[in-house]
Length: 187
Image (cartoon, rainbow, N blue to C red):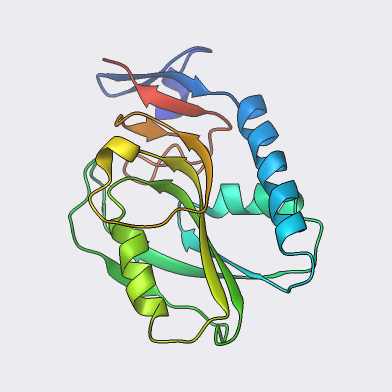
């Protein structure tokens, strides 16, 4: 039986773990529209390059760019720090580097979730090897209680508690990214 078929309207079962709705598709889309308008205003005289951190950011970045009304470019990093686990390994591995030249460019790093800050810290160190005109970070979700690195997050969709979430790009062992809403592990 396909795991997604086990879900009901209000919960999703992953083995014996139950996930319940946390942020609905409507709430997520409303906040993304607000962020898109804000970025469009702040970057209206510039040509920013949005850099998504794969795999998780793809849905957020897609919807964000649909709400950005200025010219922009995009590229992607692919990092790995979780594997198939719910807890980060504590090490980041670069799986795919950028294709774009980021020197003298306005960079907007797009994350799905910032948990410990490890990935953003890693990206900041990589970016230091270049000379961008500016770099800002936007994340759909941030877990302030979990931050272990001193990273600057310029745009935040939602601050959430230190709980495991899936859906809308966020995975559990590479599954559940395709859910339109975000679900939290029930206690």
